Length: 217
Image (cartoon, rainbow, N blue to C red; front, top):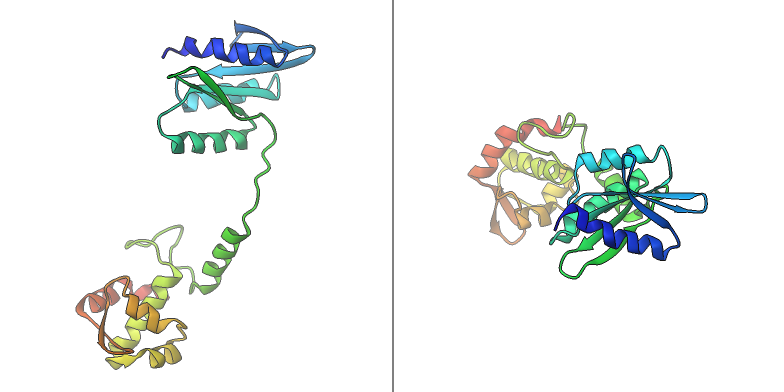
């Protein structure tokens, strides 16, 4: 597909909306007029920063600005770029090479995202459970310190001091409400089961404490 192959389907689509359409007008790839209403479309075979710069520049002359690209084989990258364009107030079209099908994925307009109560609650929970601020802008030298990892470190610290212990005792002394489940799941490979409900710290756990001991400071 060539970039010029995008023009015909875009023109046909806009003409069906009642626009008069002309290509390569001034700096714009496509300009469409319907009475006093103007729409502009920038054509590229793929998304790029240059395409977004051009489209945003066209917002100086009209709010009706689209980008049109050749539809990629994978949906996920296209979906991410559609979300970005919505944030910029841009419309998005794509042309499928196999049959020339033009799809409008987003119309131009102000971005008004729907808030996710579930995601917000998850962030609030992680914020409340995390001890201190161990990540200093994103990550320690070892990686991200989450509340779950801090709970594991608290359990490991207890076992390093007191030896093999029942989960109930670890829970009571460390305040980690899911201590037994955490040690049983052994996500980091730090714990060993001695008997039902009783766990001890293994060598990997002792080595981890040397690396992660400062994560609770």
